[in-house]
Structures are given as C-alpha cells and as structure tokens.
Amino acid sequence: MNFLITLTLGASLLIGTTAMAQDHIMRLSHGENENNPTHVMAAKFEELVEQYTDGRIDVQIFGSNQLGSEQEVAQSVRTGSIEAEILYTGNLVPLAPSIGVMMLPYAFTSTQEAHAAMDALQDPLNERLPKEAGVRVLGYLEKGFRVLTNSEREVRNLEDLQGLKIRVSKNNIAIETFRSWGLDPIPMAWAEVFPALQQGVIDGQENPYTTAVSMKFNEVQSYITEIHYLIWSGPLIVSERWYQGLDADLQEALNKAGREAAAFGRANSASETEVAMRALVEMGMTLSGAPEDEEKWQEAARALWPSFAEEIGGEEWVTEASSIIAEATADLSN
Ligand code: MLT
Image (cartoon, rainbow, N blue to C red; front, side, top):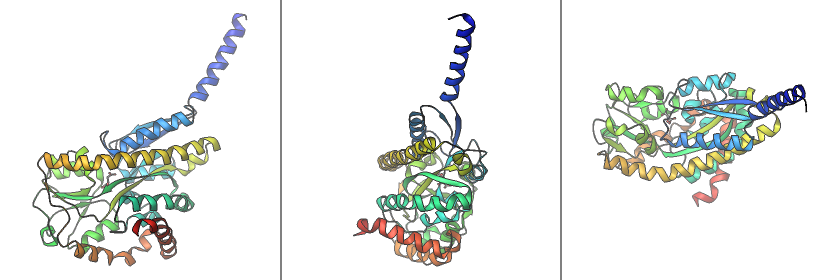
C-alpha cells in the first residue's frame, strides 16, 4: 500500500473510530457528593451506558450541584441544555406535577412498597412527563425514609417540634405537611442547606440517613427523629428532546441501563442506610426513634391528601395512579 492510500485509509478509519467511540455526550447532574447512594447509582449508570453503547454515549457525571440546584438543572434538562439528572422527586414536582403521586405523606410504609409503586408508575409517567415537563424517567432510585435532624432538642412529639426552624424542599406538599404539624417551614434549595445549618439560619432539615452521613450533618446537628412521613425517591431523568434525537438502539441501551442502575442503587442504599444510622449515633447524635404521638402526625398530614390533587396532576391522574399503586403493592400489604 502506498503512503497516500495508507494515509487516506488510516484517516478514514480514525474518523470512523472517533465517531463510533463517542457520538454523544450525556452530562448527568446530581446534588450529592461521591459518598452518597445517588452518586453510586450515577457511576453505575455511566458504566452500563458506556458498556451497552460500546462507548457511543459518553456519560459525564457532575455531582454536588456543580451545574446548578436540582430544580434549576431540571429546567435545563427540560430544554435540553443539560442531558440528564438524578434528583429528589420533591424537587421535580414543581416542574412535573404528575410525579407528585410518589410524594403523598405516609403513602408508603416500606421501601418494598415504594419500589413496587415506582416500577409500576415508570411507563405511565413516561406517557405524561415528556409533554408535561420535557423529560422522561430512565430509572427510579430510593434511599429510605427521610429522618428529621435538628440542633436544638430531642423531638419526641409534636410539642417538641414547635418553634424549630426546619428547612424543607421547595414544593407545596412538603411545606403544607410541615404546616399541618404547626410549623412555618423554610423552603430552601438543597445546595444551601449545609451552610444554613452551620450559620444557624435554620435549626434542622429532613433527609435520609445516608445523606446525613455523606453531608457530615453530625457536625452541625445533634438530634434525629424517625418521622417516617416520606421515603426519599428520585428519578434519573433525561431530556426528551435529546433522547428523541438518538438512534433506537441507543434509546434501548439507556432504558436498560437506567433500570439496572436504579436496582443497583436501591440495593446499595438499603445496605448503607443501617450503617449510616449507626455511624451517626457513634459520632454523638441522639436518636429518638419514631415520635411517641406518631398517629397525630399521620392524621394531620393525611388529611391534606385531597387538597394536593391539583398539585400532583389532577383528579383523573391521581385516581389512575392510585389504582396502579394499589395493584402493584397489593401483595406486599397483605
Ligand atoms: C432535598 O432535600 O432537597 C433532597 O432530598 C436532596 C437530595 O436530592 O438528596
């Protein structure tokens, strides 16, 4: 082969290989550091996507809110200026109300119920969310119950809770739920929570055990109460516009990787939750368990359900989603 032919062939092979090696970049944002189960799921997703697409999609992870707060990034995923994100359902609800059916206080009593509901809802949600919010769900992570932490006192009942400055995520379901317990909660972006705790702008917050550990909340919080009102659920969303521009085989690879990464993330979270709880106690936090008057907390929050219907996609969808959830969880609640 003469030099020119070799060069030409070599160059076209190189171009071919380059195109094949990386046709698409997929920036995946999340709001946690590398010690959190959200990052573990993100890393698994990256590995699986690159494996299933032979490297044609290059997943680049941006954690710790580097690309913006969870709610800001969700808006960018909607327009397609960021391709993907893993975020707390509560931070997606203002943009995508239909996903709020996972947010009703005390709707789930176990992580198994939440898994069954998330899995059964994923396809119906993907009929709605692309139109509603410009995003679709590839997989659904769960990180256990959100627990209440604070710096001031042990919260063993509703009376102890009164007067505390508690941060909640910026959605009406969280705000109204805490109001039903007699508080005036402080809605705040997740990225701002640690400094706000440090500076005493807020006394407390609620998030899963694994997050309390990865965020080192023990340095600024002393008390934990297992309020059990909500399981942390969070979808891996992708921009619908970007997704629709992909070849069918790449879409299929993303769907598969999303579901598998979510299963991996949930399993990791389950094993880390207990470890995190023990670590926080060992590091000096006082664990109060469930409130002694938990029924009152439940009664007040559950009474709000009918008022949330419009907030979470409207009556018709709530009825449809409720029957999907009831069917999916029937075997678990017997
Ligand atoms: C929040 O409280 O805003 C979220 O739970 C943070 C997160 O995504 O882990």
